[in-house]
Image 1 (tube, rainbow, N blue to C red):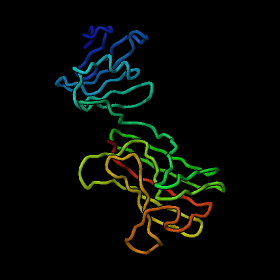
Image 2: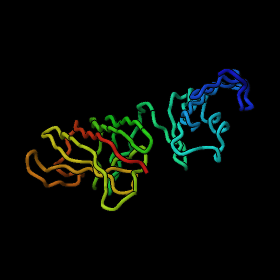
Image 3: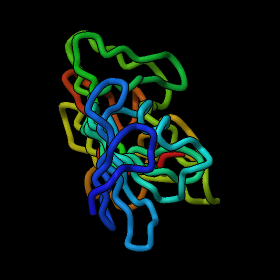
Image 4: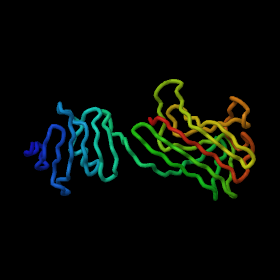
Length: 224
């Protein structure tokens, strides 16, 4: 049916499942509510996060309620504590490359990554391609993650897939994310087809790194 909305932002078109309110101005932006036949609010649409939070103060939010943000084209979901981004575009970032000894330097090489966050899940890929001026430092290598890994559970460390090449041979292994940490450790077999033995990657393991070399990681992990 058509009638006047109950919210102070203006007139509204009402039905059993849909309510469009506002006047499209800065002071009264358009807002769309979708409800179940029983009246439970399940999704809203807002200009931005500030408009969403103003329309639904903390006490009025329900677990599982979703809100679409038109300025960033993101879908968010309330989990009783915070709004989680459910749909986020792939984003470019630069991982920090460190070691337990002397810090390596990428020099004229290329170190980059891409990630997509979906709520508490992060899909990620990272690429390290050395150049002629890359220095490999000393100690075991780590690459920084875009978000801290989950610390929930015991013995539930998380893993990524790893492939490396040192200008001589290919190596395969895993990226290990310790509980609640902001980095991934690198493990590989010392030689292709060796078996189940994995070794931490360092300046001399699994072998000397000869420029140009490369290390690639990809996978999915749970965010804290």
